[in-house]
Image (cartoon, rainbow, N blue to C red; front, side, top):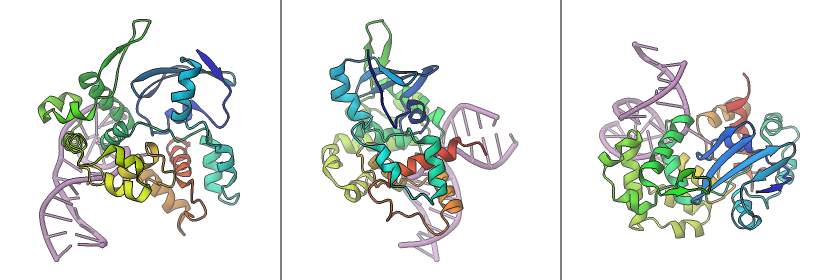
Length: 270
DNA sequence: TGACAGGTACATG
DNA sequence: CATGTACCTGTC
């Protein structure tokens, strides 16, 4: 267990920002997360965060995962003072950070996310992990499941996958798992490509259109100019940016603003 | 009861 | 290239 004081970071907001589906509240101010096959608990007490890991694990894994080296304060300062909507969004969800999630898992979880709601997305992801992931044990006897590898899913058929309640997305996931497993699309190369090329490459996968590709670019490949436009963001753009969103002005961090706007639209009382 | 949920594949003009 | 439509499934 280690503790840190972290600015521009709110684990509750991140958990509710819809970018990650295995970060869950387990008690008041307390969260669990499974990523890269590792289980972590995060607790907020007063102004400090407690992580159930060693300093070394924090430095090598979680600091990177939570994008701790990026100065979000500086980014928020760059937002136009006259941009009232974004300023409001920041005052509500300014503790959000863009996570650096595992690529394969992000591809699959965002294929699942289409025409879906967050509780059911999480349910589907957990079922995938329970059925086809690896079972791991913690020192206290508690168990958890890792996210299944591409090769594991690629070997399944639709019937074997049917326990996971994926609906029509099951077919997409099998095809995508096969494509990745056979290296028709290479995870390694995706990581080396720039934003535009990785987006194009991702869209070769069945079940990955513009929106899912943008999410993967932003939440896994950390192309922070990616700007996923879903029903919520479309509504925000229509209502508050009728003359167009100032992408040019916000070049280099537009994706972060997308997350603030998304969180604000989903959580504000209206 | 039917619409809706962080869309996409597939079929048409 | 732009537009239209069906689609699993749980929840309200």
